Length: 178
Image 1 (spheres, rainbow, N blue to C red):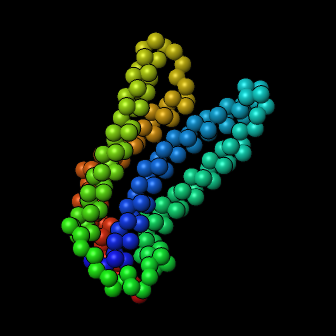
Image 2: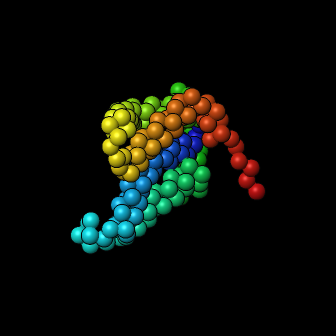
Image 3: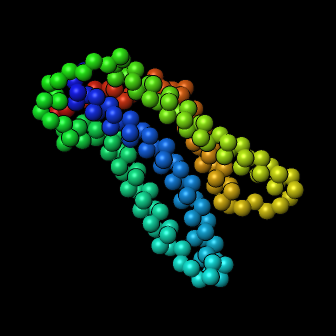
């Protein structure tokens, strides 16, 4: 394996980690969307504070992070060409495993970290949701958004762990360059 291959590998793994951060930002978007809609219907609730710039900034940050993550995952070869020296394409590096095995390990680790970090929040929000439903109390939209995004993180973490070898196979497929 060449040193440039190792750069490609690291860049793609960083992009996969950013996907986890994007899911967290998705939750923030849901919360601010609820606040934005509430401020539209009742401007006095927030002291006439305009929520639009905050919401727009959050959307812009989400788009930038998603674009950056996509570039790291799907255009890692081009990024590697920008950061590698000519010698990096010739210098060999000894690793304990092949690219696919490293991707599989990284996917399992990212999936497990995502599950471990999301599970306590999910359990807490789910317990509160059940308590509110049983007591016939109103459910806040932002609590529902937190519950949904925590559930999504757990599902994506499980997919990363369960299908790590298949995803790693997709990530290491050789692309035909014309």
